[in-house]
Length: 364
Length: 81
Image (tube, rainbow over all chains, first blue to last red; front, side, top):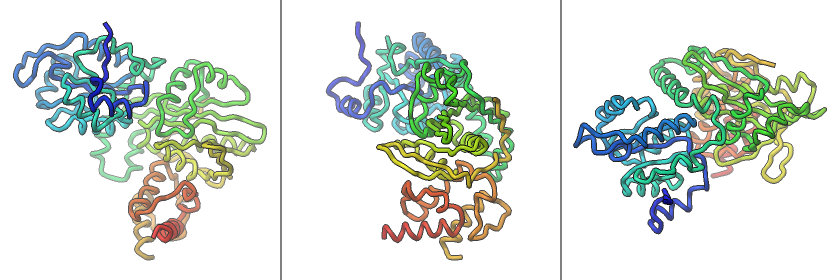
């Protein structure tokens, strides 16, 4: 039996869907309906709803692949969460939206909370109305019918090429983030003082072989805080890592709530007189921690001390303006433009020491 | 200081506590200007004043001091008026 999981052909939702959604964009978060999707039955009518075993299998398998789960359900929040807890599933779902509002609005909220694009979300519901509403408002969301989930684990959008240590821990890391944000929301006082209470340790190290899968994953997953968007395969990164003419550095961050994992990557092409930053990226999970410029200033100091000029490539996309601002505020100026690639150069007039709220460690 | 300069100073004071920022004082010399401040500063200039900061305006020197930011705003709002 072949199953297709797109909206019915010919429907308006299907047309919008086909037009807006890019082919095989990888899914980072699956948003689930509850009634007649995660369980059989309607909770408000029947307190003894039955969990669907194949859904549990899908939840756990995707979780191990580093794909997150959330909920968009029209239900009573307390009742539904208690039922999920009873099933031992409550911890699988981040930022569950259980309310009587529109599911399109719930999905927009989840995208904001998790800080990912709508094109990285899949939505599973048994009701055609709900799927069509979501597809109509957010054409980029992959909408799936919960009655037709066989084969869903084989969909390319749900199969990341590598399962890294970071992907396995992703849910826990997001939960630690949630805890941090809650503490931060309650903190009264300047942002810097709050950041100081986190006890952040930022480590910059040469990329080792065991880091390569994560390095490749970072180049593929990171859109927003990515200066060029160049992607490199595992094999290419392995070659660059060992090349004397290159330096491949990976950065990780931890604080008292736990680790954020490996969240930054840079590739520097080292010529005799000029070094060029080909790749500089940061996971958007650390965007609000004020550490984005640390890696760049580390490279600046290294290049200055090596007595070379430092350049950086930048390729604009619709989301990475923050990286251009990061470069410009670090004193880079555009010196040349070839097609979409802007070449920037630094004059070392704006190098800053690391901020006092971060413990910076360099592992050579 | 005029209205614009005062507003800029007020905005920056959130980041540089207990410091009476002078109109020509280099904020990059005061402490770590992190990516958050950078982003929020550009957003502040655009939203508060209804202007668009082009890529070529993102030059560090346009954001170094209260006066530099005020000049950028004046130039951009003049250009769009």
